[in-house]
Length: 141
Image 1 (cartoon, one colour):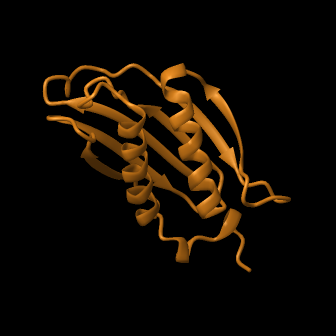
Image 2 (image 1 turned 30 degrees about the vertical axis):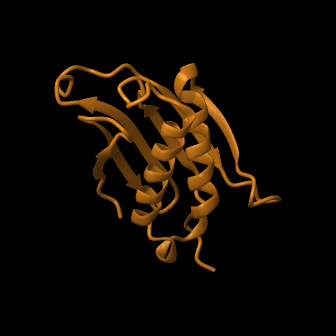
């Protein structure tokens, strides 16, 4: 899968806001960008959020390593958790850029709304990554 995949799903408990996803999966890395937009703000630019790099730990594959490359506090934890999850499942280095805003969620961005969005995004992205065809770090066994 070399061409970018663009997806969207509704922001949990929101009337008209969607999470937009761009997924790029190469043989040796995964790149993922997330943002939110409502119908009114679809043409206005969204501020940059956090950008995190995660990579598999060859000594402990269940605990990927990560480092934030660009930090914006409201999006940092969500971005780091998503990068580590994708890395753990695919065993590939992963870059995640996230500018998702939960301000327009039904309750203004509670923990439950954020967890629901995280689960939906993770399930959708992991379903598109086809783990059966992935080769860890581009090396065939």
